[in-house]
Length: 156
Ligand SMILES: CC(C)(COP(=O)(O)OP(=O)(O)OC[C@H]1O[C@@H](n2cnc3c(N)ncnc32)[C@H](O)[C@@H]1OP(=O)(O)O)[C@@H](O)C(=O)NCCC(=O)NCCS
Image (cartoon, rainbow, N blue to C red; front, side, top):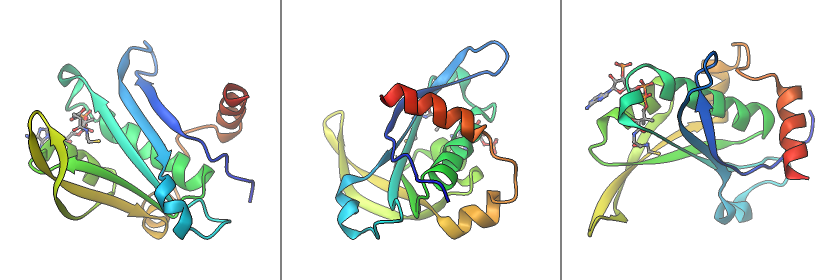
C-alpha cells in the first residue's frame, strides 16, 4: 500500500465535466481530535461536508461528488471512517448522503449555533468495510496517480 497523503481538502469545487461550470464545494478533512485515538498506520476519522446553490440541486451532482470524495478518503487516505453532520430536518442533505451509502447514526442535541438558535444535528457515517462493500468493486472516480501528483505539487 502507498503512503496516504494526509491531505486536508478544503472547499474543493466540483464542476460539470464538459463545461467546467462550478456546481458546488466539497471538503474532506481529518479530525485532529481523533488522532489521539487512531492507530498510526490507519488515517482514522475524517469529516466530509458539501454545499451547492439551490439552482443546482436535484440532478445527482451532490451524490456523485460525495461518492468521489469517499473514494479519496478510503482509497487514497486509508480512512477508517468518514462522517458528516447535517441539521435535523435537512431532508435533502440526508437523502443525498444516504444515496452515497452513508448511514444515519443518530442525533446530537443542540450541537450547532445558527441564526440565533441551537440546532439538533444528525451524524451520517461510512466505515471502511461498508465502503468496500458498496463501492470497492467499482472503478475509482479519479485517476489516483494524476490526483496524487496534482495535490502533492499543490502542497509543496
Ligand atoms: C446536500 C446537497 C449538496 C445535495 O445536493 P444535490 O446536488 O441536490 O444532491 P442530489 O441531487 O445528489 O440528491 C438530492 C436528493 O434529495 C432529494 N430531496 C430534495 N429535496 C428534498 C426534500 N425536501 N425532502 C426529501 N428529499 C429531498 C432529491 O430528490 C434527491 O433525491 P432523489 O435522487 O432520490 O430524488 C444540497 O442540498 C446542499 O448544498 N444543501 C445545503 C448544504 C447542506 O445541507 N450540506 C450538507 C451538510 S454538510
